[in-house]
Amino acid sequence: MLDCYGVFIFDAIYTITDEEFTKIRDLIYSKVGINLTEIKKQLLVVRLQKILRRLQMSNFSEYYDYVIGDTSGEALSELVTLISTNYTYFYREEKHFDFFKNVLMPELQKKMQRVGESQIRVWCAGCSTGEEAYLLAILMREYFGPEYSKWDAGVLATDISTRVLEIAQSGIYGMESLKKLPKYISNAYFRTIDEDQVTVIDAVKNDVLFRRYNLMNENPPFKKKFHTIFCRNVMIYFDYETKNKLVDRFATLLVSGGYFFIGHSETIGKEHPDLEYIMPAVYRRR
Image (cartoon, rainbow, N blue to C red):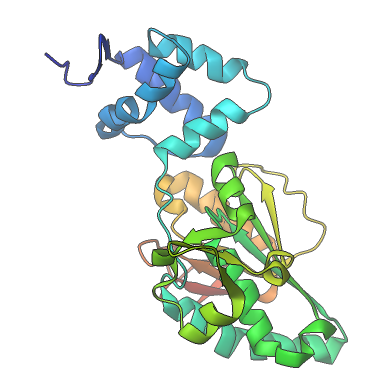
């Protein structure tokens, strides 16, 4: 018979005590800002039980000690990956990408030509498996066309999860991931591997720099501000205080007039002192 917080694995039943859950929850919150509520206790057990079996651990206290003792950060990265939802696909929330190409890019081009600059800085924060970052790189190529080589355009894509970054860097995706993309884009920027998989062409891969980065870092290492920041469907994991601090930090990392995109299920309100509401889930630095 299963405990209400347990999972039966062959001859083992994994349960988590209130103390163990609190320790792991507090660790996750302090390191990456994700707020695990009490109702996520069973989910935590379900998602971590395979790790406990693999590591031949008998309880979650042993696992907690393992995570905090791992100086490489890989154990924490694996933990965060397992408790997060990394479902995404190309052209998700497509109005954002239409706005990026048809409104933001023409506006940015004019501004940069006036001041004689050519470097376009775009950041995908919480990039997951890379679909968003690659699509933004593709849209910049589409916008500039033959003039693209005259611009220093690229995308910085960051995530705390090593596993999703490895998937992103491979550039390999299932056919289902492309189902919303216009055919002319999928035909031009993807190469078929087999009947189930495609890969992003090398030219686009070279436009995106993937790096591991923790959004809870209060001293971002970036030397220059960004023209655009995408952080979509990431802040749903954060509590009110953490989300507000992060939004304030993003605002300081945007150039004046730079754009900030969040997920449609997220909100930061229309009265932020540094961010002007433009349309649902799109803001501009004042």
